[in-house]
Image (cartoon, rainbow, N blue to C red; front, side, top):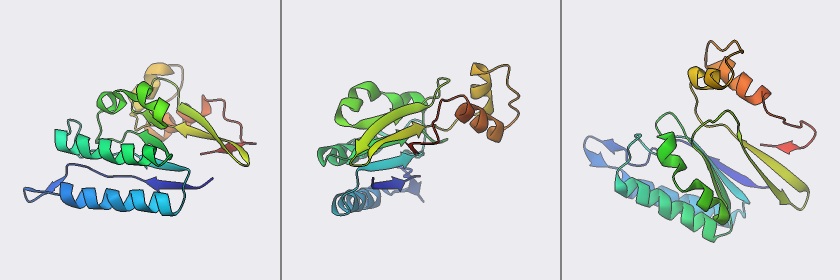
Amino acid sequence: MRFLHIADLHLGKQMNDVTLLPDQEYILEQIVSIADSERVDAVLIAGDVYQRSSPQAEAMALFDAFVTRLADLGKKVFVISGNHDSDERLNFASRMLEKSGVFITGRYDGRLGHVEISDEYGPVHFWMLPYVKASRVKHFFPEETIENYDDAIRTAIRREDIDPAVRNV
């Protein structure tokens, strides 16, 4: 399986009061072109989609157009939230988007997002863990000793039934 991994888009970022949206649009066009020419099966977007938790409409429209183009090319798209993203806003319409091959895990609910897709070699399991704070994981597992971010991540992963004998991302 071929996939393209990107992160930290920070759509909507400004520098010295100048919007970077035209530059970001250009870069996203290049990413779509690479995904197409390299015949990737999936694009993984690992957090910080937006610059701020309440992104402006133009940034949201840009991301919508980007993900739509990837889905139209038949690419699966996996998105997790980062510390700059609002998990609730990123999760909006996520169940409906799954029908188009766009999988979003914006909020940790005590389970990792899990999506299985297949290629000519069989299934590939994608485990999606968005940005979390230790207190969020502790909320779901109060009996665990979770004192920092590393403890939270270890607990969240350990609590899943991940088979190391199969292909996992």
